Image 1: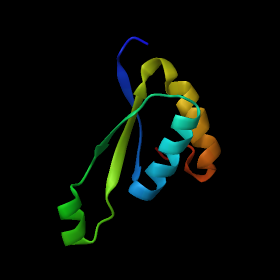
Image 2: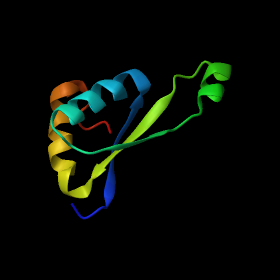
Image 3: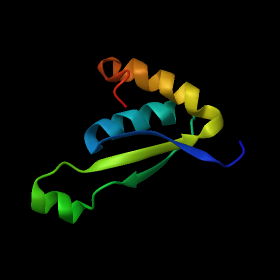
Length: 77
C-alpha cells in the first residue's frame, strides 16, 4: 500500500457503519471523517454523515463491495 487514500463515498452514519463492517470483513483499511459535527446534527435534525476513505490501490475492490451492499446507489455517488 502506498499510503494514499481516496474518497469512497459519503453516507448517513447508519449506512456508513454497515459499509465499514463490510470493509473490515474484507480487510480493507479505511478512514472516516464526520461531515457534520454531532452537535450541529442534533441542533438541526440533520442526520450525521461520514466520508469514507480507502487506500487508492483498494478503491475498485471497495467500490465493488459497496455496489453489492447498496445496488440502488450505483451511479449516484
